Every structure is written in C-alpha cells, then in structure tokens.
Amino acid sequence: MQIVEPQKVYPVIVIGSGAAGGMAAWNLTRKGVEVVLLDAGDKFDRSKFWTHVRPWEARVRLSKGDHPPQFFLDTKEQPYLTPDGQPFELIRVWGHGGKTNVWGRVSLRYSEMDFKAAGRDGWEINWPISYADVAPYYDQVEQMIGVCGGTDDSEVLPGSKFLQPPPRPRCGENLLRRAAAQKGIPMVAGRRANMTRATRGFPPCHYCGKCGSGCDTASFFCAADHLLPFAMQTGRLELRSNSVAARILVDDRGLARGVQYFDRKTGQEREVLGKVVVLGASCVDSTRILLNSKSERYPNGIGNGSDVIGRYLCEQIRIHVKGFLPDLYGQPWQNDRGIGGEHVYMPRFNHRPGFKRDYLRGWGAQFWNTGCSSDGVNHFASALPGFGVSLKKDIKRRFPAWFEFHPFGEVLPYAHNR
Image 1 (cartoon, rainbow, N blue to C red):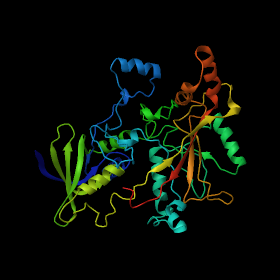
Image 2: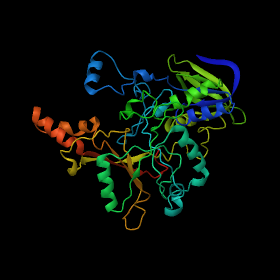
Image 3: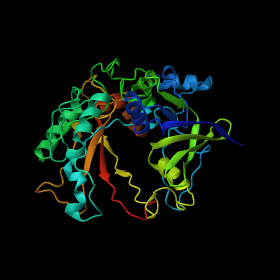
C-alpha cells in the first residue's frame, strides 16, 4: 500500500547522507534552507565499534553471539546481477554517513593534467571544468574534513596550505623513499582525512591503525559525525532513516516534484514532495534511481535521452605487491604504526622524460602495513613453516621488514562498461 503524506512541499529533498548528500544537507541548512534527507539505513553506534578489539578477543565475543556493526549491505537483502564471467563487487553502506564510515580517507587533489588529459591523448573528452575552477573548494573541504599531509606541490598533485601536519614516515617508508629517489621517483607525505590535531571539537587520531573498523573517537572524517549533527543543530534538517529511494517524481513540465521511497523495515511505499531534489546516493545507487525514474517525458529515465546514464562506469585498478625489506630483517620493532594506511605516497611519475609508458594516463602508489601491523602478520605468518618457539622467532624476525606496495591506476571510460 502506498502512503501519500500530507502535502507539505519541502524546499529541498536530499537522497543519501554520505560524502555527497551529507555535504549538501549541511551546506544548505547552514545557509537557511529547510531540507528533508532520505537515508536507506540507520545510524551506526560508535560505542559498539570493534576498533580496539584484539583478534583473540574477537573470537571470544563471536562465540558469545556478539558482533561488530554490519557496515556493508548484505547482498541477500539487496541482490544484484552481473554478466556471466564478469563479476563485479558492489560495495554499499546503507546507514548515516554511507561509505564515509569506512572509506580509505585518501584525499588527493585532481590536477590540471587530470582534468585536461583527453586533450593530450585524445581519449574521450576533457572535463568541462579546470583545476582553477575547483581549487577554492578543495581549500574549503580540506579544512572542514581535516586532511593531513605535507607541503609538496607538483603538476600531478597540487599542494595545499591548509593541510594538517603529516605523521612522520615509518622506518620502512624511509628506506623505500631513499630507494625511489635513487631512481628519480618522488615520494611525498600521504594525504588522508585523519586529523592530526584537534579540529572542530574532535580529537586527533590516536594512531590505533584500525580505521577500517570505524573510528570510535570520530578522528577521521565521517559525514555521520562531522556533517549531520551540525546540520541537525540548525533545526532545518529532517532526517528520515531506513528510507530507500526508488525513483524521482516529475511534474508535467518534466521538473522534479518529489521522491518515491520505501520503508526498509515495513516495505511500505511512500512519497515526499519537494521543489528541488539533490541526488547523492553513491555512484551506482544514484544511477539506479535515475534509470528507475521513468515517465512519459523520460521513458528511459531522467537525463537519459542520449542513453549515457549507466554507461562509462569507471572503477580503479589496483595491484597488490607484498614482501619484505631485507635491511629490516631482525631489527627491533619500532612503534610507528601511525594512522591507518601509508604515511608516504608515490604520485604519478611515468609522464616524465626517461620513463617508458606504452599505455594511456598513469598511476600512483600507496604503501600499507609497512613496519609492520597485525594486519601484515596475517598475510605472511600462516605461510611460514615450523611450529612453537621456532615459528614465533621467525615471525618476530620478519615482522619489522614487511611492506605492501599498492599501485592504483586510472580506468578509461568505455560506453559498453555499464
């Protein structure tokens, strides 16, 4: 049964509460606009995060029926299909803040080289904006979300004067940095939205290194902590949880007039009316909503008269290289865990003279678990021979030498990729 609510017409309806929807709701409400926000999930309880739960403690908790918050949407609840032989892992977080609850926090600026790449290599078309157009907004966002990093500036990675101090490089990262320099490859301080000093009332990162489990001190940027509470304080935000947007409704002129959504708990169909609809429900779900929004005026979905919506899907390609730094075998372990992720970053360099490149565009690289962390031990310990004391000694000898090299490459847009 469809429930049509009293005919209140909101100035703005925002779909999604993550990086896009949450930022839109906060900016609109602080500027005096009344907003109703639809989120497909509920609020995650930070007090129940397993950020500091040790592996052996986790086993005990699980045996007693205790479980950490389920950030990622279970595909059994919302299944999706992929072509035979072409699997695709769709990561969805239905809950306040969306994927900002568990994102990697890497916050790199696009450069003019990125925006105008097509003009140089002829693949597809340039962005309709330039770096100069968005630079002032990078400045604002970096200050707001608390990005740490260095003062490095280059043609592939523009610098910023608003970054918070970076954590010092780990021992292994210093070795990698020196080796890269000998090859003429630059490495700079990593840029992540982990606060290294108190910001807007939030404490700095305490270097536990378990950001993927959620942050119980809200020391990395999450829309649920850093945007939505401040929007609520204005008194101009109505947040509707467990509201799964299905399609955008349009009037006779083809303009948005509201949103049809479903109550996730009861399955009831509902409608909410508004003068403006802001769609910020993540890449794939936003596309789904547009394609589902069919009408007499838009038989193929809103904005899809050219059959482009849903095409040109661009993920990123990542390669995992894991191993040991021989110079660190048997060295005393240094407590330099720091933030979750790398403290140094290797920007794109293959465009420079002297570097061979037989492909378009470029790649940058991150270094994880260098030094090492319990996550690194999980990767190599089970493959070692031995048992008991000898095994422990071998693990301890290798522990400081572990490193991971993760290049991230650009995926080109193809119309058939949908």
